[in-house]
Amino acid sequence: MIDPSFKGYTTAPSTVQIDAWRVKLFCQAIGEANPLHLDENVAHAAGYSHCPVPPTFLKALESEHFSSAQLLSVLKVSVGKVLHVEQSFDYVRPVCVGEAVEISRTITDLYDKREGAMSFIVVRTDYRVDEQVVGSSVQTIMIRNETVVT
Image (cartoon, rainbow, N blue to C red):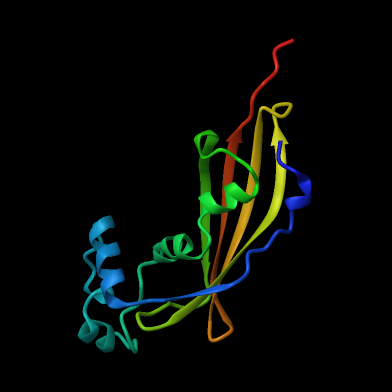
């Protein structure tokens, strides 16, 4: 079971600069071939100042801020007992190469199911550029707890 006092825990914000090389490597890793994310000329023709990043790229930025593994360490949860259950994203506007994204993460909910056999952590991540929210994500993590047989 996770200490309920961690509900509301928020990481200190940090900033990650988005560069074209990082976006290119991410696109290669996920098989994204849309030139909008890779070619400045295509991005300009589409009305962007720079190449917009693929939607799930924001998840990759979390690892440079405060990864789920680091968050679990704070909660004293073994990574070996964890399952990433789901994640959803909300976008206010596209994020582009060259922007500095400020990231912070907050534990918004902690709850148990099956008489404590499973614990769930809900984490909201906020992404800002120039102090304006550009997107957010909500991630649910499940922990398998030790069960006591009576």
